[in-house]
Amino acid sequence: MKKNLFIIAAAMIITSCGSDDFSNIYSGTGNSSSGSGSISGGSTNATEIGTTDITSMDISTDATALTNESEVTDASNEDFVENLLAEETDGLKTLTITYNGTSVAWTYCKKSGAVIAESSTAGDSYSDEDITIAKSGAHITVNAAKKMDYILQGSTSDGNFKIYSEKKFIIDLNGVTMTNKSGAAINIQKGTDGDKRCYLRVADGTKNVLSDGSSYVTADGEDEKGVIFSEGQILVSGTGTLTIAANGKNGIASDDYVYMHKGTNISITPAAGYDGIKANDGIYIAGGVHNITCSGNAPKGLNCDSLIQVSGGRTTIINSGVAVYDSTEKDYSQPSCVKCDSAVVVTGGELLCKSTGNGGKGIRAALTYLQNGGTVKIITKGSTVGSNSSDAESKGLHAGSKSTSTGDITINGGNLIVRCTGGEGSEGIESKNSITINGGMVESYCYDDAINAAKKLTINGGYVYGYATNNDGIDSNGTITINGGVVFGSGASAPEEGLDCDQNTFAITGGVVVGIGGATSTPTSSVCKQPVVITSASLSANSVLALTNSSGTCIMAFKVPSRYNGTYTLLLSAPGLATGSTYNFVSGATVSGNSFQGVCYSGISISGGSTSWSYTQSSMVTGSSTNSMGGMPGNRPF
Image 1 (cartoon, rainbow, N blue to C red):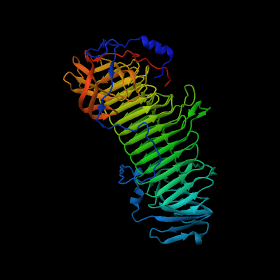
Image 2: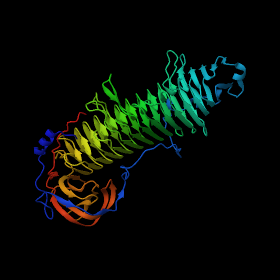
Image 3: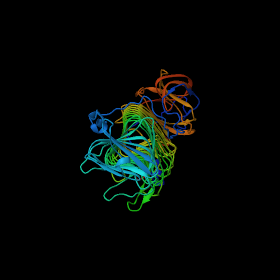
Image 4: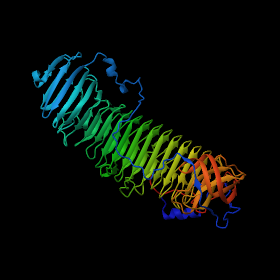
């Protein structure tokens, strides 16, 4: 929440709206004259479920294979299963291609294994009703009318495999090292009327290395976009290792989709400014280990016009690229670990994204981001590039685009952990429309807003943590509704807030809610169904605050984050609060229970401590912050 001086001044004199009771809530031992109680001392023996290393966690490539990996595949969708193999139970004709320096040898066999033809007798070309084979040096081109199995092996520093096919086919990488100095190492073009589906199998126990050239020589009417290029679908399987080191373009590129099966182990380094995997119609990661390392001007790790779906495996993307200004588009092109012009869906596996360059993003989805499971970790370190509305800001997870109001983020399960420390504009989880959290664990630690929605933020369940070192912890430019879960918003000093929704509707109907900051937005009493207390308190770092009822039962408790030393605004709400009852703020106690980011939410027990002050929950929303800004809107263009 950025505010210019005029807005700050106006906020200081505006009173929060509504019929809430903002009378002095302090009594007993509280410091009623100053309107602030004091919290210090205490300890917790709570069982913590939050990420304890969010400020120091790192992401690095790791090629260690996964064990006991499972894969969920829609068997009714023939695009996603290797139905070719099931159909051809009696085998396929095979073409074995062996590279040897500047030359290549091939052997063409029947299903039985009997040799039909070989290069030693056929010379540079061969043709029958099923296949045409032509070679020049270590470059080989095939035009096939039938389903085939192509086996590539050996080594060459100047060769390739190019195929035109009328039917779907298999390419087996059987220990091949190949560089094509003038284009793609594997170049899959469509046949006259044929299928374009390629089953790329990396033979178990083999090491394979593919590279392209720094410049491409491409046939008229054709295209090549990477080390492995296909006009059609690429389905990758097998447990051997595949290293793709690009010198000219992308790592893997498809004009259709790319699908990764379990067990795959692929490392990709695209050329500077290019993408690790680029596809038009989808990128599906169902399993395997994939490491992508990007650099240069605005590269992407995964880049797709359509759906990107991660349901298994471990995919790690390290992007050191930087944002560059496009004078034609009058906007910045930004590096991203994951960029999708449609939807990003995570249902399982691990997706690990680290962007270190200026203007870099972790995950960018133009329309929607949906997470039902799995673990997503994002680190961005780069600073904002530019100084106007076309700024390239480093973000963790971003949904939406500048030109539209699209952009929805929905979290139903799994773990989403984000850290963005690049300075102004470094927001953790940002949607240009709505954010809905129904379950899972969402943790965001950022310089700027940790969690930000343009229009609507709804939390129905799960565990939600937003920590901003210099701005709002949890922020909505529109409404906030909290119906359940454990929610902790930690903002910076005034005017920044733990929970901020400007002066829009703010409803709390359930859940355990903690907000700390220089100020807070005030919940709207007419729509709240669970009592809320707002107060200011003198806090000591790492101290423990407990809220108990008149019988001494602990309603909620939390450990004060280490950065808070001084007077801050607190917003608290929990299921045990009731209007008309009196509650005690207890300092210096020892608290046990179940904890998320220091907030004890269940199984709470308390011993020791003393009451710092008491209050009566006289209305649905009781108390106010002496530093409250009334939730004034910021002036940042969204």
